[in-house]
Amino acid sequence: MPDLQPLLAAIPFPNIDPVALDLGFFQIRWYALSYIVGLLLAWRYARWLTERSPSELSKEDMDDFLVWATLGVVFGGRIGYVLFYQPGQFVENPLSALALWQGGMAFHGGLLGVIAAMWLFMRRRAGGFFHLTDMIACAAPIGLFLGRLANFINGELYGRVTGVSWGMVFPAGGPEPRHPSQLYQATLEGLLLFLLLFLLVRGDGLQRKGYMTGWFLAGYGAARIVGELFRQPDAFLGFLFAGATMGQLLSLPMLLGGIALILWSRRRQTA
Image (cartoon, rainbow, N blue to C red; front, side, top):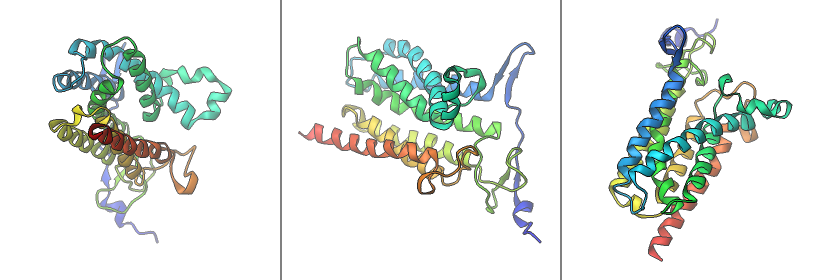
């Protein structure tokens, strides 16, 4: 007879309605709301950071960049999802990468989209590229935190089967209790990473070009690699090279690149 103790101890999923606002003719889902609120809060925080940065970028520049950031996140996230996680679909139908209404977003694709947006935005602006990336890096964990909470509300991207007392039975995850890995990742990638970057900003983090960008890349890379140890791999991919998940493989270059950028920034300041 199977051990029923983990099932008895499991926490039931709260079954929160994924639709935050339903007007009948129009619906706003928590997932979409997390993007909207995350972008707005990150924008306000980036405006505040302009007062502490040596850059010539102003609050008005942050106002202008909000549109660029939105496009980078949305289109980069969608295209990245198709390319990284469903390349077969892209080969069969390349235009599917632009089907935003079908859902499916990838953080690493969104990151590349925002990097491209920042590069294009700074081509005709005063200030260095890294001055902008440093401020955006500090604000990014806000959106990551809210996005992971939305994943939890949707009951998606749940964790692996577990026997821990806080295991949770997700509607789409079968009868066995699983790690609420969305909450782990919200804490690691969102809350803790934001606090780390905030403490560095309170020091002289923004005075070193590229320093905060490096810490964000390294911090997110490490947090994602750890979080993926508890998250159930995507069913259509499973485990890949050496038992790693796609999220871990994509985060490893971020971790290594972030460390290299931190070291470069420190050496540049002391040179």
